[in-house]
Image 1: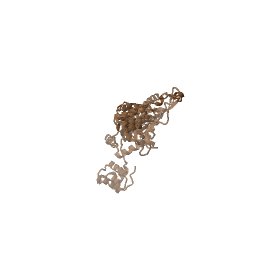
Image 2: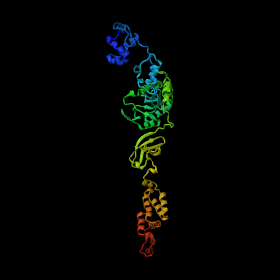
Image 3: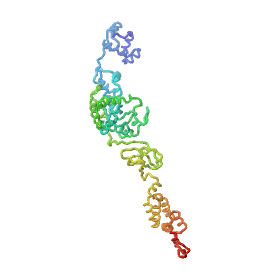
Length: 514
């Protein structure tokens, strides 16, 4: 390769600055307005000629120096090329850096090695030549990508022969590509959440992040920057102590791992099931589990080992442990307290403290309980009921007046009346029996018993006795007896009917009309 066309003066200046002033090639190039690569080329040739010091020896005049540099060719060092695939896998470790890997590379190749900057450039160039699924650098145990396949599977009802479609849920670990798949009836909230729980059990641990798509079961309100997670899905993340970070809408590259995993499951599992008939979801999932084992143990083309071996080496040791308490599906929804201090959950009504009327609460609905929270504090717990239109009411949630009203029963009124006297008890019993429904007499009974707050029990009992004798059955009549003091006077004697004693032929008498 001929020397670059620079003057002898500039050539000598390169040698002076390098050996006399000990400047770097970049500094020399900036000083002389030449590129660092030109400086490096002439320094290489000078080293071949044995020039390693300044000033030059006397025999190096301009003519001999020019001829020697023209005859000398640049010799490239035989530099050992790093194993980029191994370096790419090493970088998936949480604490690994490219700087540390370069230092280890230099330690193994002390004589000939690349500089750190060139090492980084070569690694980035290698990554660009790989498939798009490898462009994201995923740390071990960090991300789990989840999605559904587009095609569905058929499940045949053995009794009717009816075919029902099943959705296929797919999850893949970012670092190892370890894949999980299962069939569910729907993409609804419960199937979506419970698929995550079964996936965590399959992995034997919990990743730091879960990356879903923006389907309705995961995201209540999509947004490029601040998506609003479904509260039930968020409650699952809280139970497993992980974080849900939805991919941006219409940005499939954010979850490229999931896209590739879905494609692989469709090709290597669903395609093999196309000619098979399954008569229950359970048998279908057992068959998917068999094919999943083969898929994860299949050797990878561009990385060493299989998904299973990569998972055991990278992701499995870095996963967080599963919680000690198994997850139970808990639906979370926002409810408003009605004026009767009840909230409606699945057409059944549950009471809450009456002070929360018109407030918004968060209902956690599990298989057996309905738990109600206000600003993160639990305010009520009820057994879950399937009776539509019915009420579950706790006495401590009611206002004092309502609580006392609920304690009104015929037996309770009769017990209160018996404490005043027998005649009072008899009159109250007659009031309760005078209506088709005892509740219609509660107010009259209460008014009768309230007379004992103003008058002594013996007077009230005497007034009730006079009312029974005279046929009075209203509270106003008994009150009038007390106000006029008639309870203290003897009852009026019955007057004899003197007309009945008269006998005369012109008086027909009442028997005539019979």
